[in-house]
Image: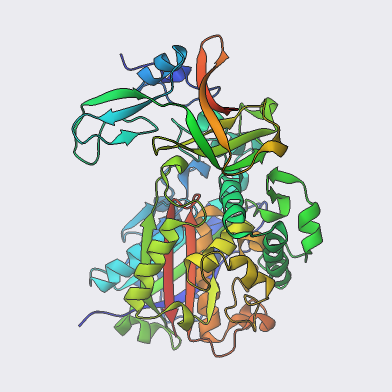
Length: 139
Length: 388
């Protein structure tokens, strides 16, 4: 039942997870976080189990997508499966909800424009026919 | 009364890009050097701890094989892993065994033969170094993760690419003097800045290289140590900490929280402060890592690491000499062996025997030394403090 993570990203090593609905939401055009129903803590990356209160009761919460770039790098060298993507930009951004995201920056943004602190938009993307992901785009 | 713990023997093989021998033989070289001159036979070693990152090994469960080849059976042996910090984690376990009175003499053997993997196999493993569920799908790799720390450090404190390059320039000067280092050529700031970009702002010469190598540290209780050697060096502080694997879940991206925490515990246990450290070996897997180490260990304030190297304060003769053996940047980085090699250098320094590496790297009168060994990208950190 919880299969589905294999449809996340270009190369993945995980197929089963309690939170594999995350990919279904990406397909619907939403980047979702999870919130613990008991203590209210928001998690991104999403997680099914809350280590604060041990609750397994969680709900999916959409992220607005509004975020700020914290740091980035232009990778000129890549692990297996990503060779043809080089150069690509990896980044960490902070969402307005307070959680941070690690992801790619869209190729539509020139490297020269990138500056830590700049506003960006976290958005779902289709990687290929049956694979989904998210990236940072222009607001 | 609490038992004191000493390092009685230290050894390492030559580090190389491709050693051309088997892992058992590589470990034997380190063990033989560590046992040299000691009043100790292998049969008197009560336990062995083997340290390695198993994803790079062809041999499954290598501890049994290494213990056999070193003549350490039937005493207990087991594997310890915290990637690049494995062998100082092993030293920590040995320290606990001896302090608790469970064992008297423990050997910690770290190794990695990274040339056992083809470059395709190494490239595939590289992509699994982060969180495989939430980070690998984006094409993550270690240089990119450290590069993001470098960018955040530059933004926050104005650290420059020239300052990063100065770390390599310094370490290459000492690497050229270390007969067991992979890279024995001096490089300049200009060479570093001109080398090709790996993950901006880090360039090829900002990065250390994979290597083959082994290290061995032998620890003993005070009573045994005094019978084994005339020059015990006391392990007086050991601190260890971890951070989230997922980069996005970290609070700090301009320093390594785990190193700050590990240092705090090590200083407290040893009853010393950063200003008391006479010589240090820090985990310079990338140039930015050494600059953050200066700050995280309290050798300077946060943000002043760039200035510290610029002023030449971390050269031998400076305020706090760091990586006088060339560091990982020059020696190469055989994952499981690295921490043991750092300990070896500090023990030589405190015994006044740094001439065993090169006479010019001896920090005169050094009494207190520190080792900072980090696993992964600030995932695990061990800080060890030694006194002569």
